[in-house]
Image (cartoon, helix red, strand yellow):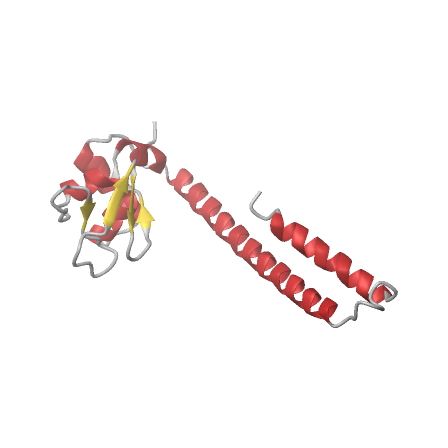
Length: 164
């Protein structure tokens, strides 16, 4: 049965990788020197199966960390972890392709969401500015004011419910 990347990530933690491949830890053994940037003071923290650097704000799993330590691809890092940690089986390249495609789609969706959010922020700002130009006396009699108010309210409602 082929072994996919998820199985490797579940079998090996980032901290195990750091310890095996000789990353330098602080005295308490909680943080290590980050291989993603020129680190002089341990800033790479470990939690669960993952690691996170509080300086360069990069995080990853055992495969990502192995890849960075040795300057190799994620596939080669997975192969190395299989051998070094005794995780048997073959890599399922189809699952790798699916995971990459899913990650790409997620990134594209995040980009589209960010663009939509920025657009709504501009709409809210521009309609608020336009509304401020109307005087209190004649605002409600002006159909343009009412339309701008609807647009402003819609933008605000959408932004207020953005994270839900």
